Image (tube, rainbow, N blue to C red; front, side, top):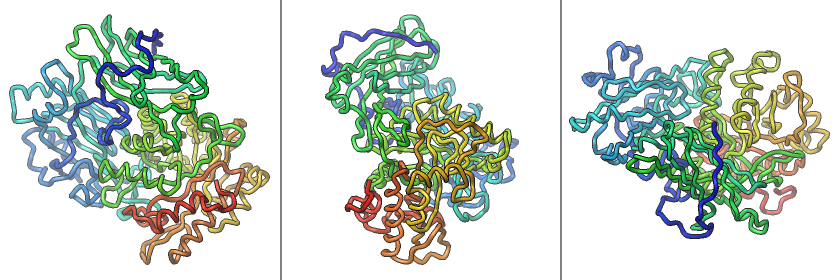
Length: 635
């Protein structure tokens, strides 16, 4: 990595922009990669031809070839998994191997921005669970393993054939997802044929957008942002698609609400660039906070980046955005922008009955974030999935803090370590510029490290994940294992499904009670901290109750599941209110996460039903969550 220092150009902050560029902060939420935005792209969602391959015969039978149409007798709606109704397939049985096929047309390439200026054409797949192989026109583009993270291929040489053959090219995707592979990161996808307990219907194959874009031969492949609040600056880290020729320049322009904050140009001497950009406006302490991001005031700064190389017919111009904020812990508090901030969070499974882990529409992602805010929460814990980046955009824009997880495996082995570590680091790399993400959580409730309390290898794994996460992104707190058996966490988190508020007050109401809990056995019968795995360094870690509640209110469903059960509206309101009021009154607790936002499968412990309708009026639920009615201990 080369750090490039640069001087600001003569452009004066506060003057109007001299060139038109899209504002990434006000995009409509359909673009699949919201922090690296180009104006033209082609969505390849919609009807694809589809085939199941239960005997895994397709590779030997060469189903990827243009002539192999016979197996593809059905139609699936991409990007919805075949288990879901939205896909048009609705087969919830085990789908170990599935195949997709569609024709790629010249019109779609033109829509993606391909013209006559030597552009490269990129094929992007947002997520395919679990292992994917991709072919275009019978040529194998490559493979990807990991069902939660994106991947892409340069298909320029392949699509050149469309210039002489207008019939189109055959795009084929094979997905392999073994439901019985316990080393594979699966999250809450059930290994049984029918969902049970806290496990849900599976999501196999393509479940996030597939899309095309055309880019200049030399282009920005990846960018990340990091704010330094005391210094009044931001740092851009950029990776180019290839080593730049001499004379290449990168111009970065930062604006907010039409005001130019900074403009800087640097010589791009290497493929990896790191550019510090001073924000003169932030030197004025009286207006310093106006640009800071928080859930209450989700201010975003727009960025336009232009990469120009000598000999290129066009520059690569992309839009991005960032949020100026800091997060940390000290003195038993979570800190946002260097001030104590109490987290009112809700567990978000990110599952829809009609589309499973895939959102039913781009608009549904905005609705989800807005619903959480309307209920009075200022944060959400994304649970056992890597959420669609478009939801992260809405959290950035509307103001919702997020704890980020990924799907965990069910057993420990060298292979499970390799699979989850690689996928987790890919996720951190993908999402680290989103201001809404305030905490990283690589493991949940010792999933995949079930014997971590006494198995030294599993303890090293948990420690390693925490250390690797901080190495990649030292700017956020890390929870090594949410709920119990912490090895090295910046926040001590506990899961406690007490049925009554007085139980919570007894366990968390005084510093003495909390000290005893952290030193001993938690409510789930597990040690909270593995002090023999690593020394407990006092970094002022706060305590948070990151799963509690779980009150089931099912309206007569025979298959309902929950941690406790309400009989009617009044009983539900009383139980929810009792637990929430109790935890807000526990002063040693720095935040909470309520289980959960929605009913999910047979889990009927949501504040909302599976279709996102509230079980009580939203204003009633909001008062219960926040204590806004003036109840004791409201915060």
